[in-house]
Length: 159
Image (cartoon, rainbow, N blue to C red):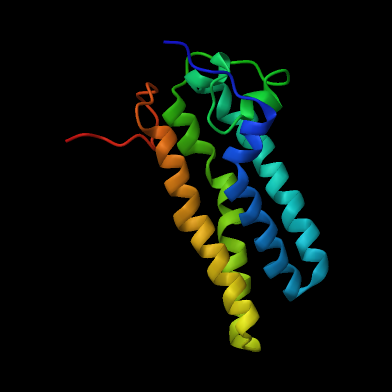
């Protein structure tokens, strides 16, 4: 069975929740101080590039061009697949680079709600949390089912 190659259209579709998460996060952070929104978006882009450089080359899907996130399309020419270190080790070692992109907007949103409560901020914060902590992981979980990357830390273990 051949696995279909990812296209740019697939890349946008598969990363839509992450894109929405970053945009809503930038709006929330921008309400604290508008230049922070640009800094946050730059950080999000940088953290994804670092993830592509430090984690993706160790995944079996990377060199096959079957990465569900499509990162191989964006970084395949810049970062070559690497053998030796396991994907799980690289993932655990470097995933923290992305953590601030997930947790700064809720911190900023809670700060805004404490300083000056607003229903609009509560809605934005709720949307961010639903997308970041429920929809995005659920979407990613579909890609993990049947994945042959045995050392992936996200892979569900059957006990």
